[in-house]
Length: 390
Image (cartoon, rainbow, N blue to C red; front, top):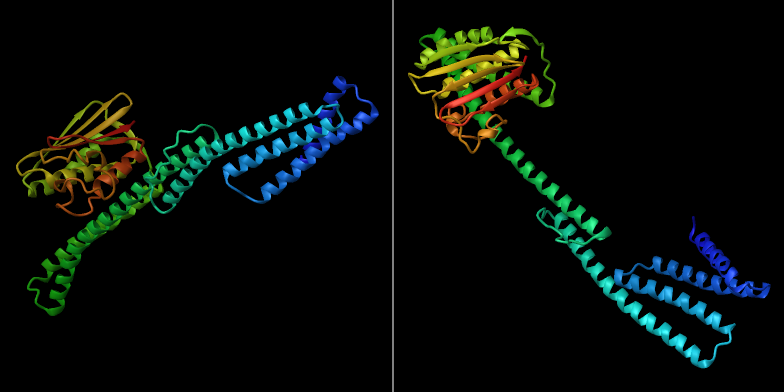
């Protein structure tokens, strides 16, 4: 509906409401139409002009008051011209209109100043946020549209601040991960280079021993690449599982047997205990890898001549695996994030005091892909439990 249509409807409604009170003659109808139409047209023209010339909030409010009072003055003046009004009454009417105009202009100025101050604060806050100050806040407790706008700006600033902190954390995590991967790659590559140069120069007295060492280094690099590939698939949600009924006690027994030689070299003992029905529908390769990662982590950090315990238990609709060592355990400050990628928790729990430490993040991803939970417990010692649905 256009503005002219709205004004025409207002004029018609005003004239219709006057009819039962005044019982106008045809001549009076013409006068009423003029009294209502002329101020409406003037008000519409003034509003159109003001909208084309933007101004401050206070100025806009004062202009609105002037337009309203001007329209009222036109109506009163037109009515007085066709009525019998003495000079005294006319002066009273004009005085009342003048006083009303003054009061309206002062009130509009006060209201406009308050609104303008709030809007300036909103603009300043938005500008600070736009220039990177995500901790800026409006501090406004207004109600209505201005209050809603201030609340929206503050909420936006809070979300931007959280996003900025997360971005900085992610950037730091990427730097740590790249540095750790560089550490893990440097050692086997340097060993491979030295062995190749020795073979090329003919100074290797026992070539077979050199080839065995090179094969070991290649295995280390292959496991690291495999870890990175698995982690990337977990992050993208592209890892496909093939669950089947598996006795997790038997799976743990096989895993423990495969790591007996490593434990023996480190002068450690492996102990497996089982409690209850430990059958669950899982991907045996994925859960086997979880167990190997947890045991590998425990064997790396357990003190010599101690025991690493593996406990498998089943109760109700859940099966639990627990790996416990007598090492330094996890730093309480970082225990909750210890299984996150590249989290730099206690150096005693990272791979050889440095390294990427991807074993726990991969284990957690595989467990969560099964709908389970990996939990790292508080000191003393290192203790990690995995809970899986049957």
